[in-house]
Length: 166
Image (cartoon, rainbow, N blue to C red; front, side):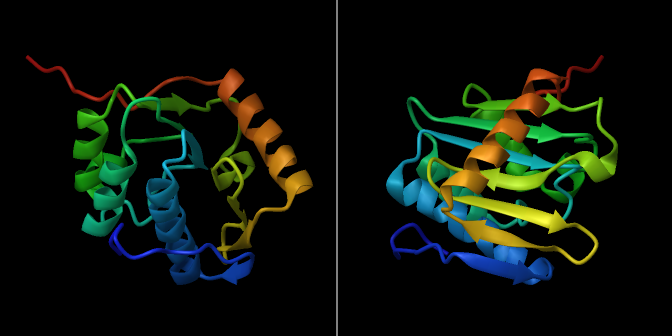
């Protein structure tokens, strides 16, 4: 995955972690290519997202810039630095673009696993089998946007960019 090679997003269903991860990679790459101003990511803990990959962080570097915003919603971030050290370092570098929020009021099963861009979204509806859709369909995107916005409104700051120690 390199930002020099154009990637197109493909609408439709997916099943399995491999397909989900590929959709996440592709969406980040398209965000970089098209310089999307905003993305929203949501997951219980982001453990099975491909954020540890060098190519994903490379694409995020290509995306990052003035006027960009990434909102992350999660129940827990405790495993992110351990499982995704490249991403955790990127998050520290670009902390002014990344707003990490903790959603405490929902159970794990109620936290959407989704990625939302200006026109595209990925929504993993069955976490156990990693089944979901990637689409541009307007009504579903609006419903997902409203759900994620409600989660954001009821969240608090989390996953600090730096860890202060003694």
